[in-house]
Amino acid sequence: MEVALPTGISFTDKEGNERNEIRTQWWKPKLTTYRDAYIGPDGVDLPNDPIPDVATTLPEPDRPTFIGHYWLSVDAPLRPRSRRVACVDYSVANHGPLVAYRFGGEQELTADNFVAWPPRPKS
Image 1 (cartoon, rainbow, N blue to C red):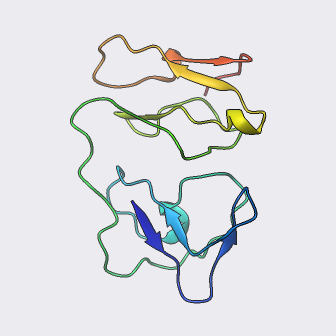
Image 2: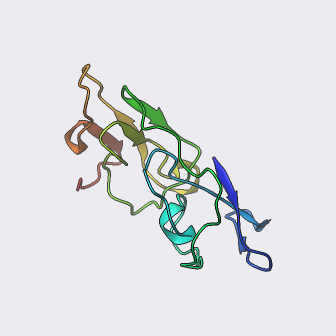
C-alpha cells in the first residue's frame, strides 16, 4: 500500500528517481504520520505530519506473511516487522545480505529464524 506525500514533499530513491509516495507498513494499526507509516531504506527524511483521512492499513494478516521489495537498510536488524509479518529484502542487490526465514509452522514469527549470508547479528 502506498500513500501520496503532501504537495511539495518528495524524496529521491536508490536509483535517483523522485518519489512523491511512500510504501506503508500496511499491517500496523493506526498509522498516523508519514514518518511512522514509511517502510524502506533508511535516510529518507519525511514529515512527521498526520496522514489525511485515507485508508493506510489493512487488517493484520491472520497467518505468517513474508514480504519483499521494500529494500530495508543493509544494516537493519534481522527481525519480524510484526508478530506475523517478516520482510526478507535487505538490499542484496546493493551489497546487503541475502536473507531468508526458516519457517517451521509457527503462528508468531521470531528473529531467531532469520538466516543471512553473509551472517549478521539479530535483534
